[in-house]
Amino acid sequence: MANSTGTTSGKVRSALVIGGGIAGPVTAMALQRAGIEATVFEAYDGPADEVGGGMGLAPNGFQAFDAIGVGDAIRAVSAEMNGIVLQSWNGRRLAQFGTLPGIDPMRFVIRAKLFRTLREAAEERGLTTVYGRRIVDASEDADGVTARFEDGSTATADVLIGADGLRSTVRRLIEPTAPAPQFAGTIGFGALIPAVGVAPTDGRMHMAFGRRCFFAWQVFADGTGVWFVNLPVAHPLSIGEQRERGGAYWLDHLAKVCEGDTTPAQLMLAATDPGTMLFAGGMEKMPRAVRWSRGRLVLTGDAAHAPSSSSGQGASLAAESSVELARCLRDLPLPQALARYENLRRPRVERIIKETARTNARKAAGPVARVVRDALLPVVFKLTKPEKSAWQFRYPIDFDAPVA
Ligand SMILES: Cc1cc2nc3c(=O)[nH]c(=O)nc-3n(C[C@H](O)[C@H](O)[C@H](O)COP(=O)(O)OP(=O)(O)OC[C@H]3O[C@@H](n4cnc5c(N)ncnc54)[C@H](O)[C@@H]3O)c2cc1C
Image (tube, rainbow, N blue to C red; front, side):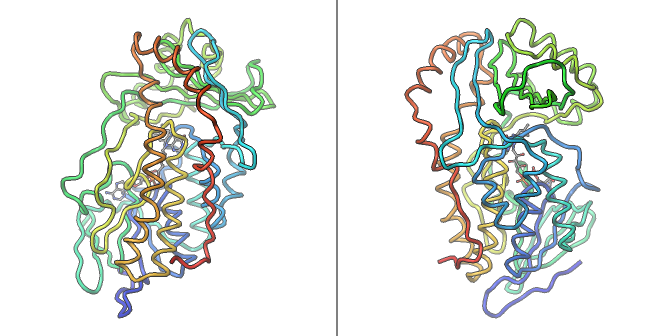
């Protein structure tokens, strides 16, 4: 498969988007809006409509989704989170965050629903995703860049965008010595459940630093709810390995792990249909990518910048970067576009990554660290003015405004 390539002006007309996760379809839709022909190449043989647990979407992410006209479709499959309540294993409230004035609330979404919504929106717009294409190499010359896939096929375009996630191959093609992501100490689970008599949480997500795991839950007005768990483990398990043991095994295990914590975990786990349990695999942290681009290769989404899974910012920052990359490619010749893109995005994403990095360590805290954490958290949060983080949530994108 080949796209049209080559321009004398250095302006990009075609793109290979590697990875059909969250950033992939967003990038393709943004490029289409920018007048750039885009094809998505995904390693899996078909759409991964069932993969992943629950996640937060930040208001800044919606500003990016709105810029390409998919914000409302995502609002329709997600639920408002009017606040977050943090508590200790014994029910002691450690901190509470509400919404900030003038800023929309965070929203909660099951990753598979977000993915399906983006995939369907891209399909409706006539964008093509080619499945079963795992990139293994890329070569470039003055006319374009050619991706080589594991099955021997190739594709050529003006630019190649790596939206291939945390374990990005494109990142290694850009920087062969790029460090791999590191296991962050926990594996994730989640589920949607029917009404079981747990009181609605008024739009708030409750998060408990339990004695042996981190348990979060939200109960909606109709009594149905959602829970997710981060379970500290010595060795990471993949989603496949989690799934192999089966939902019933894990529900039993999690019930034991949550025993004695003052949360509705026992009720909610007992009400969970083992067949509908969501597995999220090992939580990973990614070391800073030194380079975001080289020649005609560039990164977006988790491949470029992955905040901790507790930041509530991963998908939102991915969407922002993907939309901004399309604007830069629309308005500037390739080398300047990629330099401008990194210069526009890196300071913001690295500041957010730094500010949100500590939560994962808190989730996997050992007994001593737990006592220290529970003692210090209320003080830390009292001293922290929530308005100080408001800058994270404001990122208006005027798609049509030219990139300087
Ligand atoms: C348990 C968990 C909870 C999370 N919670 C949150 C949260 O609350 N809020 C939030 O915003 N984010 C959260 N995240 C992170 C969020 O899911 C990611 O930040 C977001 O999905 C980034 O999208 P992406 O497209 O860059 O990467 P991905 O969604 O990982 O997509 C990458 C795609 O590339 C494909 N691919 C990989 N290698 C190749 C290759 N060689 N060739 C072709 N295709 C390839 C993959 O199959 C995949 O489809 C969470 C993540 C996890 C695991």
